[in-house]
Length: 432
Image (cartoon, rainbow, N blue to C red):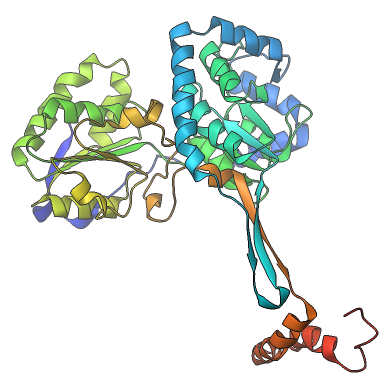
């Protein structure tokens, strides 16, 4: 049963504690990465047999199989995927940046170039659930950024095939190549390349503990979006909320993963008790009851705060992945919220809307990292470089300033690199 804590009577560590997944996978992941680097496709096939129970003869999914998957996908879902893709693209279009040029006096030019990444690797989870929504959320910002090649990896099913709905999403969103491999071995393949899997510039997409650890270990050889932890939701709710709805929203994240976290912060003790009862009533009806039960009992909590302003302060301290603000005037609190991956405002905006259809991205910072990081966006698929051009008159004006500055830092070679351009022994020998 989910715990109820009174904020005024509970120690700080109990309010803000996050349960870490039990056990480290650092060493086994390190070995998997080493084997993939050494053995390439051979290691990928061996680990697919060991972890997924599937013998695969080829790592890559051919275009014919992708087209077949598209034809086999649920037509109603295909229509939804098209419409969801359009909404996600419309939102992310506003994030597209332009290069700029600054023209100053004396002919000085300064600018910034926005350059798309060449090749990106997209990890799509499999196993207990396959998520075509992850394809949409990770692929579309990359396409809008101008990435030339998007490579997708995802674990195969017991038949060695990729679920049709995943392949349909891949085709709709414009994935260029698909590989039937998952886990830490897939991350290693994307980071270092194998005979079949090309090395990418950046890896994005959620995964389990092994995937997260692998992304952490390959970072530096390749870029990553984030090291994602278990899914989280925090609901701020006043006493007017229907406890059945609040309970349903909490369970929507609890069903993801046994390590997922569902937290309610309310100013109403009566609502807290009613939500606790509603969770117990709804849990047995869930297809993923066992997973949600462990999540709720282990990581779930209901915090009773003195008022809604205190509730917002608690939310800012927790910095949740998803934050619902279920109150009468939610926009009154928007500017007070400083730390959250994605905010859902009002009583008619469940977090699940953001997972599938609203438009904003659902790949979000977890584990409190919303204090300093952001949702996946078009920015994650570009790099910025800058350039400078000075004419000789402009350089002559700057020369004393730069030379003094460099000498003050003890970097005389820096100073000389500008001074020498005005040394009488040199001037005239160089093209001014």
